[in-house]
Length: 393
Image 1 (tube, rainbow, N blue to C red):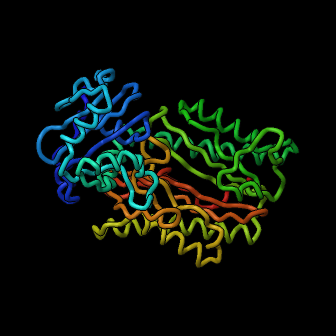
Image 2 (image 1 turned 90 degrees about the vertical axis):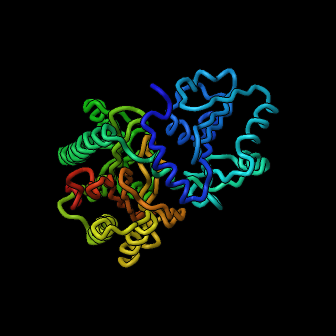
Image 3 (image 1 turned 180 degrees about the vertical axis):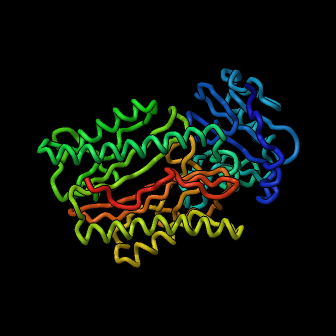
């Protein structure tokens, strides 16, 4: 398979024109910039620096170390080898002097997922007489969008883990009703076994938190220190999986309540969190119908507004959602105007989570999480039937 196979150079030229850039300068060293290898389609050792210029006019140019030239077999342009640093600098100077190049940088580190190129590399490029601008719109277009096969795998995983979540939470309730001990790590293990039976893989066990532990967004239960389920507890189960490592995962959070009816406080928080989730999706659908652009920051704002209006604004302590691509926390637009200011426009082909939460330290936490794929025909929510009510287990 050749590098840059099926790459849309016409679309790149158009976007580079809008950026006022002469080319996209891709850089990587030891995998610190996964977008570079993803865009290029490179599979190799990556123990030496490489630079690839995808120009607005002309053919691509790669600068690669002599011992790693095999990684550039099939490259649709010129490969310029180097060995000594002086050769690298000479090749770079000749390539970028007087040009404006887009790189994976984010001014003032506004979006850390974009800030992949070290400051020293930027200094080097600018020292050769080039101007560096952010490649954020290019990353969205060429690195974050899903292929048809990735969408199909995500859909299958989404329905499977929704069923796993239901079954796992209901199992906990039935065990509790029978008088058996149910601990967080037991629920976690059961979910992992179900993920494997479904033919899916994950890179980390699910987050399972009962009651006060659910108020820690990234809680990890530990055997011997995990909580035992009790009547009246809130149950949080956050699980993610996909067809294979490096595929587009599905990522969901489901909530249960160990009892016949949740308390008034639990019900109020659930309604606020669910309302925030639905408000974000609703704004996206509305903007899509009107053919109006919308950013991840705008969706974060509307979700946060719902929770703030319910009186829980101080307890929503993370962004509304994250990009999903070949990394679970991907490089595309995030639903975020809180932790970062992600002003990138959401475009067809990208996917992301929508996961508002309220965390009352020492009491309980509630989060609901769905995924959205923005297709050519509009937003598609996965799973097909998102959680509407707390699962009474």
